[in-house]
Image (cartoon, rainbow, N blue to C red; front, top):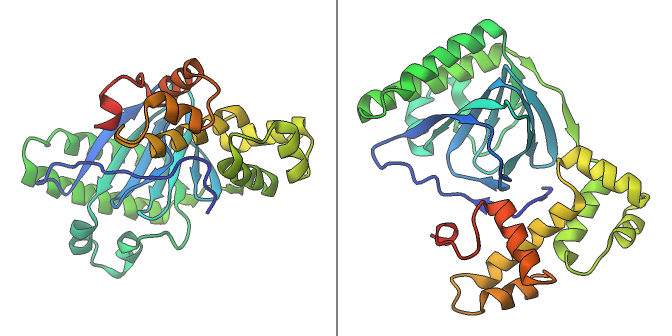
Length: 276
């Protein structure tokens, strides 16, 4: 698996009486984290366009695309236009096991996709599915009603997905794959010239290709690796001070660390929200 970002098992913290969740997402000005979670997820793109990385494959999505994100497959939205919007649905695996009982629902019970995960729906079906999701989302104050509606929405989404057209995917270039792996191991020592030499491309070609395929620059990627290393070193703050952990992670100074931290996590290092 190609790991472009710090891979995190994300806890969605669903209310205990909900079998999943459903919400409408709009463009947000922060970097998303490469992650996975135990719940099956679908995204229905309703406006704009974006780029997903799902393991070692890249999906360019736009309005009408329906993509399924499985529990063991790490994913991240690396690009999105300012008008990007989508519906997001997640469902607990235990509840899904009792819901998706027909033979054609077998893919929904798996931890990992065995075929296509992204298809483009006809506009009429997009509109019908959006109407259904909007109705279900209004019932959250009644858990039994919401759970029943969410289950119906998941099965309906899968039904229209099966009948839709596949979306072309692109494999990540081997040089980009290798560069990402090198930077994960040596994010604090290797420079662009050395990196390009090891991948067999010129610095300019590698930089351009890396940005095209991942949606992020090599500098930003390197900084995310440093940030991930900081989070591991710092932990709950009992082993190292924040400054010591930042320097050990490869940041050249506290101001640089502070800038990267706020850009990627949306808050300052002093905020209590990021480690709660």
